[in-house]
Image 1 (tube, rainbow, N blue to C red):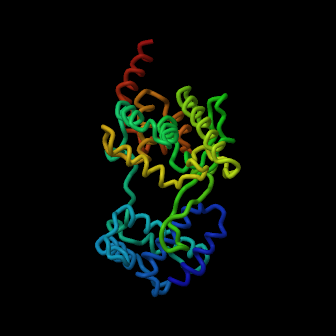
Image 2 (image 1 turned 90 degrees about the horizontal axis):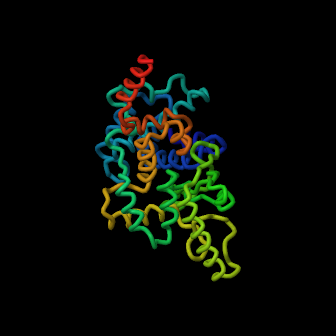
Image 3 (image 1 turned 90 degrees about the vertical axis):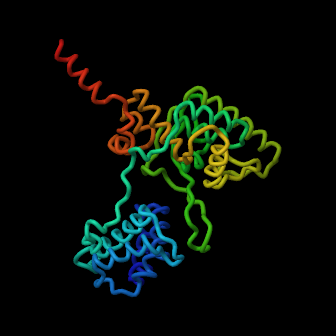
Length: 328
Protein backbone atom coordinates (compact mmCIF):
# COMPACT_ATOMS: atom_id res chain seq x y z
CA UNK A 1 0.00 0.00 0.00
CA UNK A 2 2.72 2.48 0.97
CA UNK A 3 4.67 1.84 -2.24
CA UNK A 4 1.62 2.17 -4.44
CA UNK A 5 0.30 5.32 -2.77
CA UNK A 6 3.55 7.26 -2.44
CA UNK A 7 5.57 6.07 -5.43
CA UNK A 8 2.88 5.57 -8.04
CA UNK A 9 -0.51 7.03 -7.21
CA UNK A 10 0.34 10.48 -5.84
CA UNK A 11 2.98 11.15 -8.56
CA UNK A 12 0.44 10.15 -11.22
CA UNK A 13 -1.99 12.76 -9.88
CA UNK A 14 0.70 15.44 -10.06
CA UNK A 15 1.03 14.68 -13.78
CA UNK A 16 -2.75 14.89 -14.29
CA UNK A 17 -3.86 18.41 -15.21
CA UNK A 18 -7.49 17.54 -14.41
CA UNK A 19 -6.79 17.08 -10.69
CA UNK A 20 -6.84 20.41 -8.83
CA UNK A 21 -3.75 21.19 -6.77
CA UNK A 22 -5.81 21.67 -3.61
CA UNK A 23 -7.29 18.19 -4.12
CA UNK A 24 -3.82 16.68 -4.57
CA UNK A 25 -2.64 18.34 -1.37
CA UNK A 26 -5.64 16.94 0.49
CA UNK A 27 -4.99 13.43 -0.86
CA UNK A 28 -1.30 13.63 0.09
CA UNK A 29 -2.15 14.77 3.60
CA UNK A 30 -4.55 11.85 4.10
CA UNK A 31 -1.99 9.39 2.75
CA UNK A 32 0.80 10.65 4.97
CA UNK A 33 -1.16 11.25 8.18
CA UNK A 34 -3.69 8.42 8.21
CA UNK A 35 -3.60 5.80 5.46
CA UNK A 36 0.07 4.82 5.32
CA UNK A 37 0.56 4.65 9.12
CA UNK A 38 -2.44 2.31 9.42
CA UNK A 39 -2.45 0.33 6.16
CA UNK A 40 0.93 1.02 4.55
CA UNK A 41 2.47 -2.41 5.27
CA UNK A 42 -0.48 -4.37 3.89
CA UNK A 43 -0.37 -5.85 0.39
CA UNK A 44 -2.43 -3.77 -2.01
CA UNK A 45 -4.35 -6.82 -3.26
CA UNK A 46 -5.14 -8.12 0.21
CA UNK A 47 -6.95 -5.10 1.68
CA UNK A 48 -10.64 -5.90 2.22
CA UNK A 49 -13.75 -3.89 2.90
CA UNK A 50 -13.61 -5.20 6.46
CA UNK A 51 -10.06 -3.86 6.89
CA UNK A 52 -11.20 -0.44 5.71
CA UNK A 53 -14.26 -0.47 7.98
CA UNK A 54 -12.03 -1.21 10.97
CA UNK A 55 -9.63 1.55 9.86
CA UNK A 56 -12.46 4.09 9.70
CA UNK A 57 -13.69 2.96 13.10
CA UNK A 58 -10.28 3.61 14.62
CA UNK A 59 -10.14 7.05 13.03
CA UNK A 60 -13.49 7.89 14.63
CA UNK A 61 -12.39 6.78 18.10
CA UNK A 62 -8.60 7.09 18.21
CA UNK A 63 -7.73 9.36 15.31
CA UNK A 64 -4.41 9.31 13.52
CA UNK A 65 -0.87 9.39 14.84
CA UNK A 66 -1.69 12.34 17.08
CA UNK A 67 -4.25 10.27 18.95
CA UNK A 68 -7.13 12.71 18.43
CA UNK A 69 -10.47 11.32 17.19
CA UNK A 70 -11.54 12.59 13.79
CA UNK A 71 -14.91 14.09 12.96
CA UNK A 72 -17.34 12.18 10.77
CA UNK A 73 -16.78 14.64 7.91
CA UNK A 74 -13.00 14.19 8.06
CA UNK A 75 -13.31 10.39 8.07
CA UNK A 76 -15.62 10.71 5.06
CA UNK A 77 -12.95 12.72 3.22
CA UNK A 78 -10.32 10.10 4.06
CA UNK A 79 -12.68 7.45 2.67
CA UNK A 80 -13.02 9.49 -0.52
CA UNK A 81 -9.22 9.48 -0.87
CA UNK A 82 -9.07 5.73 -0.26
CA UNK A 83 -11.84 5.14 -2.80
CA UNK A 84 -10.10 7.21 -5.47
CA UNK A 85 -6.76 5.46 -4.86
CA UNK A 86 -8.29 1.99 -5.17
CA UNK A 87 -10.39 2.99 -8.17
CA UNK A 88 -7.25 4.12 -9.96
CA UNK A 89 -5.53 0.87 -8.93
CA UNK A 90 -8.34 -1.07 -10.63
CA UNK A 91 -7.99 1.05 -13.78
CA UNK A 92 -4.22 0.44 -13.76
CA UNK A 93 -4.80 -3.33 -13.65
CA UNK A 94 -3.43 -3.85 -10.14
CA UNK A 95 -6.77 -5.02 -8.74
CA UNK A 96 -9.94 -6.63 -10.02
CA UNK A 97 -12.25 -5.09 -7.42
CA UNK A 98 -12.21 -1.83 -5.50
CA UNK A 99 -12.37 -2.87 -1.81
CA UNK A 100 -13.68 0.57 -0.82
CA UNK A 101 -16.92 -0.36 -2.57
CA UNK A 102 -17.31 -3.45 -0.39
CA UNK A 103 -17.20 -1.64 2.97
CA UNK A 104 -20.42 -2.62 4.81
CA UNK A 105 -23.07 0.04 4.21
CA UNK A 106 -23.57 0.89 7.88
CA UNK A 107 -19.81 1.31 8.38
CA UNK A 108 -19.18 3.36 5.25
CA UNK A 109 -18.34 7.03 6.05
CA UNK A 110 -20.82 9.48 4.58
CA UNK A 111 -20.46 13.18 3.97
CA UNK A 112 -23.16 15.25 5.63
CA UNK A 113 -25.82 16.35 3.17
CA UNK A 114 -25.54 20.01 2.15
CA UNK A 115 -28.11 22.56 3.18
CA UNK A 116 -30.88 21.92 5.65
CA UNK A 117 -31.20 23.39 9.11
CA UNK A 118 -27.42 23.20 9.68
CA UNK A 119 -26.81 25.87 7.02
CA UNK A 120 -25.65 29.02 8.81
CA UNK A 121 -26.47 32.43 7.40
CA UNK A 122 -27.47 35.90 8.55
CA UNK A 123 -30.66 37.84 8.20
CA UNK A 124 -30.53 41.11 6.26
CA UNK A 125 -30.52 43.02 9.56
CA UNK A 126 -27.55 41.00 10.84
CA UNK A 127 -25.64 41.55 7.61
CA UNK A 128 -26.25 45.30 7.79
CA UNK A 129 -25.08 45.34 11.43
CA UNK A 130 -21.91 43.45 10.56
CA UNK A 131 -21.02 45.65 7.60
CA UNK A 132 -21.57 48.75 9.71
CA UNK A 133 -19.21 47.32 12.32
CA UNK A 134 -16.62 46.45 9.63
CA UNK A 135 -16.43 49.96 8.12
CA UNK A 136 -13.01 51.45 8.66
CA UNK A 137 -11.30 48.04 8.52
CA UNK A 138 -8.73 47.84 5.74
CA UNK A 139 -10.29 44.71 4.24
CA UNK A 140 -13.84 46.06 4.54
CA UNK A 141 -14.16 46.38 0.73
CA UNK A 142 -13.33 42.66 0.39
CA UNK A 143 -15.95 41.71 2.99
CA UNK A 144 -18.50 43.99 1.33
CA UNK A 145 -17.78 42.39 -2.03
CA UNK A 146 -18.17 38.88 -0.61
CA UNK A 147 -21.49 39.81 1.01
CA UNK A 148 -22.93 41.52 -2.07
CA UNK A 149 -21.81 38.92 -4.65
CA UNK A 150 -21.62 35.57 -2.85
CA UNK A 151 -18.06 35.09 -4.13
CA UNK A 152 -15.90 32.45 -2.43
CA UNK A 153 -12.99 33.55 -0.25
CA UNK A 154 -10.44 32.34 -2.80
CA UNK A 155 -12.22 34.23 -5.59
CA UNK A 156 -12.16 37.48 -3.62
CA UNK A 157 -8.52 36.98 -2.63
CA UNK A 158 -7.55 36.22 -6.25
CA UNK A 159 -9.48 39.06 -7.92
CA UNK A 160 -7.34 41.29 -10.15
CA UNK A 161 -8.11 44.79 -11.39
CA UNK A 162 -7.85 43.64 -14.99
CA UNK A 163 -10.92 41.48 -14.32
CA UNK A 164 -12.99 44.35 -12.88
CA UNK A 165 -15.04 46.73 -15.07
CA UNK A 166 -16.36 49.45 -12.78
CA UNK A 167 -17.85 51.44 -15.67
CA UNK A 168 -19.74 48.38 -16.83
CA UNK A 169 -20.57 47.38 -13.22
CA UNK A 170 -19.35 43.80 -13.42
CA UNK A 171 -16.33 41.65 -12.72
CA UNK A 172 -15.11 38.32 -14.07
CA UNK A 173 -13.95 35.54 -11.77
CA UNK A 174 -10.91 34.03 -13.48
CA UNK A 175 -8.37 33.23 -10.76
CA UNK A 176 -8.38 32.10 -7.14
CA UNK A 177 -5.92 32.23 -4.25
CA UNK A 178 -6.48 29.45 -1.72
CA UNK A 179 -4.44 27.96 1.11
CA UNK A 180 -3.45 24.36 1.75
CA UNK A 181 -1.25 22.48 4.19
CA UNK A 182 2.40 22.82 3.21
CA UNK A 183 3.50 19.19 3.03
CA UNK A 184 7.01 20.14 1.98
CA UNK A 185 7.61 22.25 5.06
CA UNK A 186 5.88 19.77 7.34
CA UNK A 187 3.67 22.46 8.89
CA UNK A 188 1.90 25.68 8.10
CA UNK A 189 0.13 26.53 4.87
CA UNK A 190 1.04 27.73 1.42
CA UNK A 191 -0.93 29.76 -1.09
CA UNK A 192 -2.16 28.09 -4.28
CA UNK A 193 -3.08 30.22 -7.29
CA UNK A 194 -5.50 28.44 -9.59
CA UNK A 195 -8.69 28.58 -11.57
CA UNK A 196 -12.22 28.83 -10.13
CA UNK A 197 -13.80 25.72 -8.66
CA UNK A 198 -16.08 25.33 -11.68
CA UNK A 199 -13.04 25.18 -13.95
CA UNK A 200 -14.03 28.26 -15.95
CA UNK A 201 -14.61 31.96 -15.35
CA UNK A 202 -17.94 33.65 -14.76
CA UNK A 203 -19.35 37.16 -14.89
CA UNK A 204 -20.68 38.71 -11.68
CA UNK A 205 -22.76 41.88 -11.97
CA UNK A 206 -22.29 44.60 -9.36
CA UNK A 207 -24.79 46.95 -7.73
CA UNK A 208 -24.06 50.71 -7.66
CA UNK A 209 -23.15 50.64 -3.94
CA UNK A 210 -20.52 47.96 -4.48
CA UNK A 211 -19.12 49.83 -7.47
CA UNK A 212 -18.76 52.91 -5.24
CA UNK A 213 -16.99 50.87 -2.54
CA UNK A 214 -14.53 49.49 -5.10
CA UNK A 215 -13.90 52.93 -6.63
CA UNK A 216 -13.05 54.34 -3.19
CA UNK A 217 -10.82 51.33 -2.50
CA UNK A 218 -8.98 51.74 -5.80
CA UNK A 219 -8.29 55.37 -4.91
CA UNK A 220 -6.96 54.37 -1.49
CA UNK A 221 -4.77 51.67 -3.00
CA UNK A 222 -3.38 54.19 -5.51
CA UNK A 223 -2.45 56.46 -2.60
CA UNK A 224 -0.70 53.55 -0.87
CA UNK A 225 1.19 52.80 -4.05
CA UNK A 226 2.27 56.41 -4.49
CA UNK A 227 3.47 56.58 -0.90
CA UNK A 228 5.49 53.37 -1.31
CA UNK A 229 7.24 54.51 -4.47
CA UNK A 230 8.40 52.07 -7.12
CA UNK A 231 8.39 48.92 -4.98
CA UNK A 232 4.73 47.96 -5.54
CA UNK A 233 4.31 44.29 -6.59
CA UNK A 234 3.13 43.64 -10.13
CA UNK A 235 0.48 41.00 -9.32
CA UNK A 236 -2.42 43.38 -10.04
CA UNK A 237 -4.54 42.08 -7.16
CA UNK A 238 -7.51 44.14 -6.02
CA UNK A 239 -7.05 43.54 -2.30
CA UNK A 240 -3.62 44.20 -0.82
CA UNK A 241 -1.93 45.36 2.35
CA UNK A 242 -0.40 48.84 2.68
CA UNK A 243 2.86 47.68 1.08
CA UNK A 244 1.10 46.07 -1.87
CA UNK A 245 1.63 42.52 -0.66
CA UNK A 246 -1.25 40.09 -1.06
CA UNK A 247 -2.95 39.11 2.21
CA UNK A 248 -2.81 35.40 2.96
CA UNK A 249 -6.26 33.89 2.20
CA UNK A 250 -6.58 32.94 5.87
CA UNK A 251 -6.24 36.64 6.77
CA UNK A 252 -9.66 37.37 5.26
CA UNK A 253 -11.20 34.75 7.56
CA UNK A 254 -9.34 36.00 10.62
CA UNK A 255 -10.47 39.58 10.04
CA UNK A 256 -14.04 38.42 9.49
CA UNK A 257 -14.05 36.30 12.67
CA UNK A 258 -12.62 39.14 14.76
CA UNK A 259 -15.23 41.61 13.53
CA UNK A 260 -18.11 39.15 13.81
CA UNK A 261 -17.31 38.51 17.48
CA UNK A 262 -17.86 42.19 18.27
CA UNK A 263 -21.04 42.68 16.19
CA UNK A 264 -24.63 41.91 17.30
CA UNK A 265 -24.88 38.86 15.03
CA UNK A 266 -25.06 35.07 15.28
CA UNK A 267 -21.89 33.08 14.71
CA UNK A 268 -21.09 32.10 11.13
CA UNK A 269 -17.90 31.69 9.11
CA UNK A 270 -16.72 33.88 6.27
CA UNK A 271 -18.18 31.29 3.89
CA UNK A 272 -21.48 32.02 5.61
CA UNK A 273 -21.57 35.33 3.71
CA UNK A 274 -21.95 33.24 0.55
CA UNK A 275 -24.82 31.31 2.12
CA UNK A 276 -26.34 34.59 3.30
CA UNK A 277 -26.17 36.09 -0.18
CA UNK A 278 -27.84 33.09 -1.79
CA UNK A 279 -30.46 32.71 0.93
CA UNK A 280 -31.55 36.35 0.88
CA UNK A 281 -31.81 36.32 -2.92
CA UNK A 282 -33.90 33.14 -2.96
CA UNK A 283 -36.16 34.37 -0.18
CA UNK A 284 -36.69 37.55 -2.20
CA UNK A 285 -37.92 35.43 -5.12
CA UNK A 286 -34.84 35.43 -7.38
CA UNK A 287 -34.99 32.41 -9.76
CA UNK A 288 -32.82 29.48 -8.73
CA UNK A 289 -31.01 29.33 -12.07
CA UNK A 290 -30.02 33.00 -11.78
CA UNK A 291 -28.66 32.47 -8.25
CA UNK A 292 -26.82 29.34 -9.42
CA UNK A 293 -25.07 31.26 -12.20
CA UNK A 294 -24.15 34.07 -9.80
CA UNK A 295 -22.61 31.63 -7.31
CA UNK A 296 -20.73 29.72 -10.00
CA UNK A 297 -22.60 26.45 -9.53
CA UNK A 298 -22.40 24.23 -12.60
CA UNK A 299 -26.17 23.78 -12.61
CA UNK A 300 -29.19 24.71 -10.51
CA UNK A 301 -29.46 21.25 -8.92
CA UNK A 302 -26.36 22.05 -6.85
CA UNK A 303 -28.02 25.25 -5.63
CA UNK A 304 -31.21 23.40 -4.76
CA UNK A 305 -29.28 20.84 -2.71
CA UNK A 306 -28.13 23.63 -0.44
CA UNK A 307 -31.00 26.09 -0.44
CA UNK A 308 -34.27 24.41 -1.43
CA UNK A 309 -35.53 24.63 2.16
CA UNK A 310 -35.29 28.43 2.23
CA UNK A 311 -37.33 29.10 -0.92
CA UNK A 312 -40.61 30.47 0.48
CA UNK A 313 -44.03 28.99 -0.21
CA UNK A 314 -43.04 26.76 -3.13
CA UNK A 315 -45.97 24.41 -2.70
CA UNK A 316 -48.50 27.15 -2.03
CA UNK A 317 -47.46 29.30 -4.99
CA UNK A 318 -47.42 26.27 -7.30
CA UNK A 319 -50.90 25.21 -6.20
CA UNK A 320 -52.27 28.73 -6.65
CA UNK A 321 -50.63 29.09 -10.05
CA UNK A 322 -52.21 25.85 -11.33
CA UNK A 323 -55.61 26.86 -9.94
CA UNK A 324 -55.25 30.16 -11.75
CA UNK A 325 -54.53 28.38 -15.04
CA UNK A 326 -57.61 26.19 -14.61
CA UNK A 327 -59.76 29.25 -13.94
CA UNK A 328 -58.95 30.70 -17.36
